[in-house]
Image 1 (tube, rainbow, N blue to C red):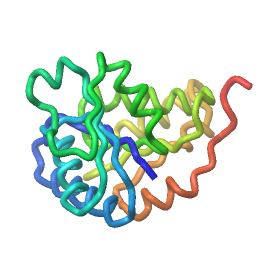
Image 2: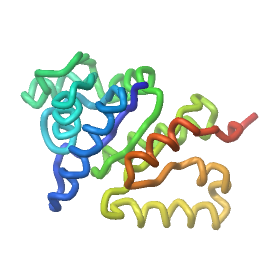
Image 3: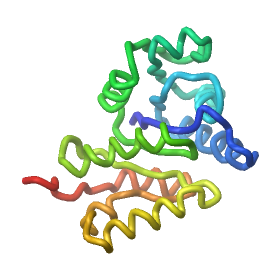
Length: 186
């Protein structure tokens, strides 16, 4: 199984973000989960890659040319694909992945996971989408998703398709047992 991981190019202000990312990388490697990610050596992106690799796992990076040229590309990956832009990066990551997981990050992380969620809602794929909610990082966002649902902008079945956990075992079992809802427009 390959999981696309979206996360920060920063490590955040709390060392627990790094600790949780290292533990998740080890868990993935120990359970035969390969990681597809943005190809960077910095922030939580570098942490997840280093952890998976350090524990014998495989990591596939996809990085746009303009970021590679800024010398932030991770040089020790199983494979690094250099692409023309962010759109191509997301398309290749989506094609390579069996599931999507967002770790703590900024607006780029949100944009990536919400594109995957939107595609799932529209029936463009049937892959699970998850938030690895370290220290409740995504609690307010999950409240907003609930608000969208209660306000009539997101049906409950699509709100409930989102996996939200801070536990690696629960994350993996939820991904493995995921049953997608019917596409929005059938």
